[in-house]
Amino acid sequence: MAKSKLCYCGSGKLFDDCCVQIHQGLRVAATPEELMRSRYTAYAINNLSYIPQSSLFMAE
Ligand SMILES: [Zn+2]
Image (cartoon, rainbow, N blue to C red; front, side):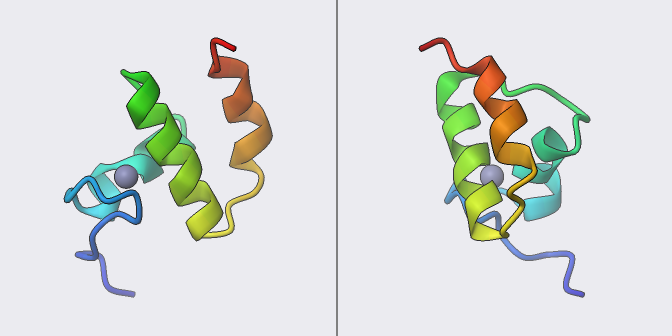
């Protein structure tokens, strides 16, 4: 397992420092953009269990 791959969301940050922390509840998305990135990444890694709970944070 390579730990240094970039996040799928295109932020340029390492995967382990980016959306995965939101997926695991280590931190909350600070902006709507970050939330959308985390949802995209969840699709990209097939982490479908994250999608329904993340929708709770959507404003609309
Ligand atoms: Zn990301």
